[in-house]
Length: 165
Image (tube, rainbow, N blue to C red; front, top):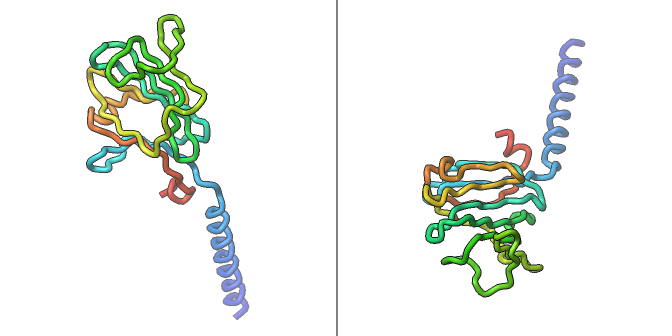
């Protein structure tokens, strides 16, 4: 009889520890993750952790001008804030009527206020444009990752449980 009572106490202790552990995990802050997914199917191609102020950039070759374009964003919550553009010549889709600075032949547009703020960024990676996604300095070949399929970039918050599963 004594063994049955101690066994129940042990089981109760395990259950209490599990409940407390689950409660503790639930209170941990959610991690921000940059997701790159197929626009049409939702298939996830890339998932990288980011923090507030992480730098996310797109670098590509302008399809008409055949020159480098660099769009820089920083993460603010679940928003991508476009703060800087660099390009080597004016072309379709590039800012032509704003004040730019010429830095060693590169035109830099870095206004005090954000250029734009986005909850999602839609990109059509191209083999000619050779789109590269840069996350905190780490380069990802967006064309290879997506097989040149249209993608949606966005930030999600994921709990520890979601990351484990």
